Length: 127
Image (cartoon, rainbow, N blue to C red; front, side):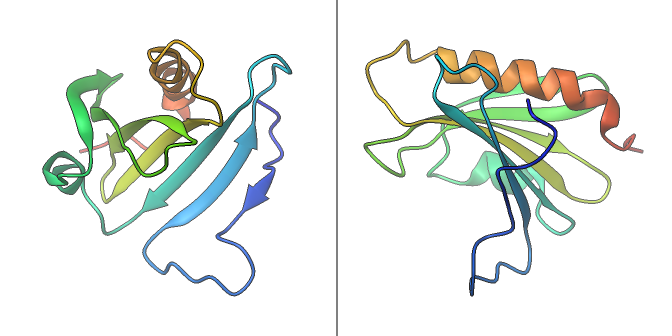
């Protein structure tokens, strides 16, 4: 990924006080996806697991961190996969969004897990 975010924050005039957000573009011009990174000091992995809009959930470990992989069906034009990673305190969520639906449905999760694993060493150690 390009270390410079394509977007930071939520956009002009939009305030989401409990989440910080950055968006990065795919480094591969043949794969049109975005990596969204959201972090919160108050949300938890339990909330991610219990949210009924988080579909096809799977418990994971990312290094020493408890994690939860899931998909959503927020928009028909977006295929996504999310990896929520527990922090102390809080949560970080890595989301891969593809803007096309004519692809292997597993690809967003493969890419989300790869980016999450690559960035795991930069996460704070949980207690």
